[in-house]
Length: 490
Image (cartoon, rainbow, N blue to C red; front, side, top):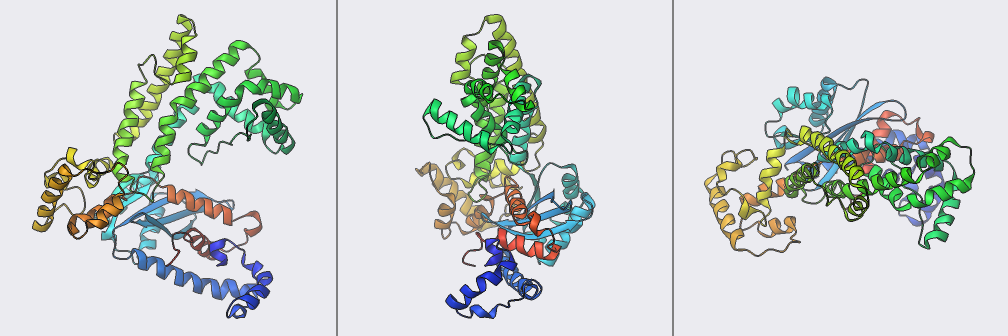
């Protein structure tokens, strides 16, 4: 209970009277905190892991891996294993050095300790770090015959977004985001004055600017969208502050003339409207607990088309952007359009660099066949799907089901809101062979978001007051804390 709720074990002393009074055998827990840590925590953790491993054993699995550095300057490798939309943190490994050799050895040792059959692993998901690519290419691929390497699609889209963040033409936008963050950092009184100022000016429920966080996808764009809505008020507010702080001075300098203010407004408006595709794609692909895999290929291809089209268009950037462009002189407009086209070109180059050679691109293309709404437009010959597990040497039963399935979907009228998991569970008696394969692939991973979430849990647990936790106890507590929601009812 304490581990799942992130309650420090030393708090049990204060909770004990309540447990004794209201819970059956509430006094069974020892008062000594050391006994809880050394005896009860390992025992409860062992029971927890047995339940988790029982849930994944015998199923087709996805292994999601990522590494971070904690506030103790320790390199931490988290291993999350998923099946049918449910992801469990199975190991937290503390490493002295992080390279392709140590990472691949740590992964294999962890899977061996948890008795995971390597033949059941269909994908290994990592970010685009060079050591991760080499770890799979040099080591993991040889011992996981049915697996493919799937680099995180969200990470790719985030890299595309960063091209605009670092694009020279948008440097004033990047500076505004940074200086506004600095102006409000640890300034609660200024935040209250800003909220009061907004209440008077806009008569709506106000909020402070969201802080851009480098480790949180979309946060920079969310910040830009906020500034786009409120930048017309910044000059008045920060001038009234009469502050000598450098951040405030820099904000006012960005808007000290009408020309600068209009240029800044145009750039903020363009990014706010143009980033909509990136933000939407990220939000959809972050939904790892829903069957996103059948949409991943279409999302990425549509995003690529959007970026390449942006390198030449003269309008259609967005309602407000088009309006601002129409008010400009033709010579100035051409110059601005050249910069916007170049911004789209830079973003498309980054996109193509990663998506065109993505190791799981063909998988995302093929798994669309398990969406009965897309299947009629897909290749009907079963031999075309030999890359997928289960189709390499199709049995006569599978081939017969395959032909029947394609005949059915061509004549079925299906809702746009069709729940794929319910569809394949409902047709399991009619298509048992295809259904078994489909349930694995509709949940094929598209991102490492669950590993990122496990790091968020880790950092929430390992506060400054709990840095004395041993590595073993940290591992036990983080795993049970992360798995608390998904393990309900185990």
